[in-house]
Image (cartoon, rainbow over all chains, first blue to last red; front, top):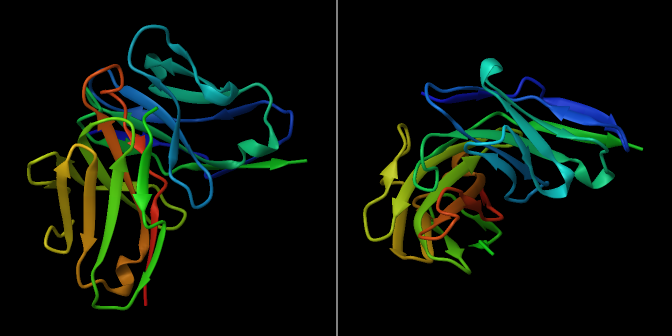
Length: 115
Length: 118
């Protein structure tokens, strides 16, 4: 069965500093990997996804993530954080065509941005 | 594109009553819709998967008689919480995947519905 670990519950980053949010997954085959962002009281917005091909994936809002099969990781990065990036970030893994199959989510990392 | 709406955004009801939550795909046809539940400061837990015109598939531990799901059209799925109790208070989020086109492999999420049962 798939599982996702986000080891950091909270992260505080100064505005303008770089960011890396960690995500490790467990899945026997090639995973479909996603990062979503959730603002307070809101639904989830897709930041980026990896299915195959180039292991460095570019997303919206200046985010990118790198798939590392040897480390079972899919860490999210941003070179310069803005105050509006403060939110909850969820990594998720799916099997096969995730339009029709369930996603398994990590427990989330809350990003706080300090002035 | 790929916008999903939910209604209502917030609902407060008395214990023992039933509440219906709607999930609509606004600009695409959703063959499959998913219902998730999220407790405060926790992750999303899948409750059920529904395909248009068929019965929903519930995850283990989810009471299908309590959480009624109907996916009557390609743009609408409803979740009815029957005989709601305070422990059903939660944030309910739906997602939908598009049939056909390049977005069949991605779920698009609605903004969620905050249910409070008094």
